[in-house]
Each structure stands twice: as structure tokens, then as C-alpha cells.
Length: 227
Image 1 (spheres, rainbow, N blue to C red):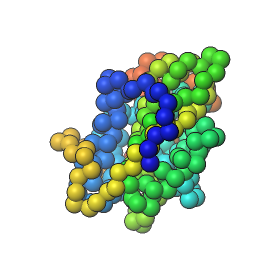
Image 2 (cartoon, rainbow, N blue to C red):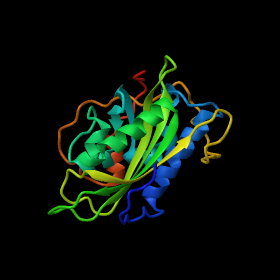
Image 3 (cartoon, rainbow, N blue to C red):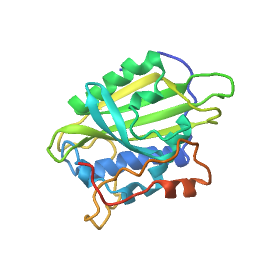
Image 4 (spheres, helix red, strand yellow):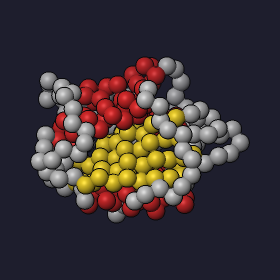
């Protein structure tokens, strides 16, 4: 799928760009040549520098997924805790079909989805572009019904919530035994007895405050796996 036009401010190769690259490379390292890595293999220590932008979501219906865990940057964009909300919460109504099609391709292909986003304008809502990366994961039963992803924005968030139109969708097929273009020498966490993210306790529906380091610390990382 290709874009439908429009000018999009690129994500600068700073912390946000590194977050996208880190999540993609970590997923590829976990894959180890297999078709798709398992949800239980995801260890938050492997993407510590990208946790603010990362998420885990589960498939709940064709073309639909809801957040099981999301970093504080996603909460900032929405102005509230997004855990339990559908991924389509971030899409403007006219772009939800494109997001649904991309999600279903990730689950069914499996494929990798890379979306370029442009926020809806409005009073108190300055120009804001974003990148969304969606990577498939297997459950303990072997079916592909989880995704690991990364959503980063470039610009001032302004008044939340911020929803996005999709200006470009790029899908990449996954073939077992072949790299997807994100080969990495990143070391995997040594202690494999702490698999996966766990869902944090519900938080007040308020915009998080403090430094990025403080907000990352608010993302509780424990050793329970959601399956």
C-alpha cells in the first residue's frame, strides 16, 4: 500500500528515530531466523531505551487490536491511559479502514507494517507527524494474535487527544530463514527467567508529568506474562 499524498514532516534521527530502530532490531534479534518470535520472549530490558514509545497489543477481531501495555508517550498523545483501548483510537475516522487492513495483514501474513501519520489540525493542536511500526508475535499456543510496536511523534503534542490520518502504509513480507532488513548485533537479555511485559495496574486518567526518565519509571515492568 502506498501513500495518498500530503506533506509529512520526517521523524528526526534523534531519540524517537532510535526508538523505532531499536524495537525493529530487537524483534529481529528475537526472531533468530524464525517466521515470528513469541510474545513470551519479549523482555523489556531489551528495549529499555524505547519503552516510552513501545506497546504490546492483542487481536480481538479481524483488523482490530487493543493495547495490553503502552509506553507513556502514547498516553501523552491521548491525554489518558490507553491500556485496554483499541489501536484505532489513534486513527482519524477516515483512516481507520487503512489501519484495520494493515493490522490484519500483520496477523494473517504475517507481515511488518510501517505507517506514516499526520495529526488532525485544530485549535491548540500544532502540526504533528508520527511513525507507527507494527510487528507480529506468537502466543503460547502458536497463533499470531499479538503485536509488538512503536509509535513516535515529531512535533509538539499540544492539546490532547491527538488522532492521525495515515499518509503512507508500507508492508513487508516475512519469510522464515531470511532477514527482514533489521539485522542487528544487539545482545539479548541474559536472564530469560523474566519473559514478557506484564500489564500494569490501572492508572489515573491524567496526562503524565515529569522527565522522560521519570515517565519511563512509571511504566511498571514485572515478570508476569499475559500469554
